[in-house]
Amino acid sequence: MSDRVNGILEAACRVIVRGGVDRMRMSDVATEAGVSSALVHYYFSTRNALLARAFLWADEAADAQVVDELSRIGPAIERLEALLGFYVGDDELVHTNTILWREMWSHARFDDELRERLVESYAAWVEQIVALLVEAVEEDPALMLQDPEAVARRLAAIVDGLGAQLLLEMVDRAGAVALVRDAISIEILGLARTAT
Image 1 (cartoon, helix red, strand yellow):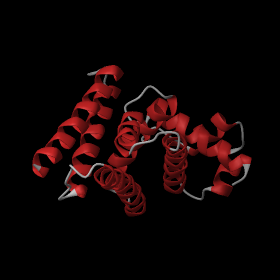
Image 2: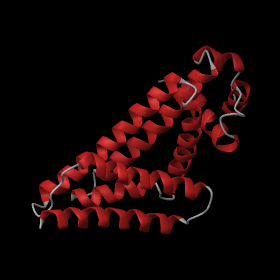
Image 3: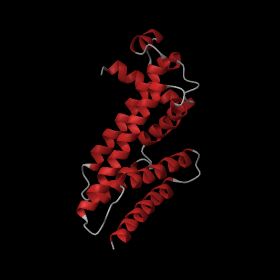
Image 4: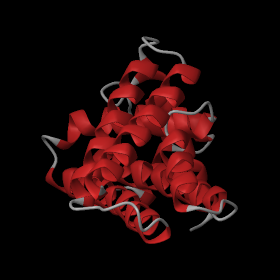
């Protein structure tokens, strides 16, 4: 992808984070990126195409950062905690990604293409959680995992809810991280109880 396209996508994300999807205009993105509106339209024929691509661009950037961070962590349980903790952490990329997800979710109801992309991205995230749960059970034979997808979906829902609360400053980041750790502990202790 060219630097120009990256610049436009990054600008679109900044515009959305500042004012939301409803207020975003192609001309705002052009101004933010320091390019002409014609150039934005050249690369993205419609506003919806730009929105969908900006979301994917930001989501891919967050995923790449998470994969890099997880590669330096040993046990699966610690990687799971780092993965979920990342999405309630204080990283600027996380803040941007959380706002974009919230904005895109509200629009995806009315945009089939955007909904499809969101569903695919979310499914990949849940699958990443499932894989870490399965690996944790393989590392610790005392644990039994009857329904890793259900556990993954519960953990994902907790992170989603905390993300919304963080945006509205209903919980602080340290509190959100602690709640994620508690949720993992409860799930893992529940798994341990099942195994005994």
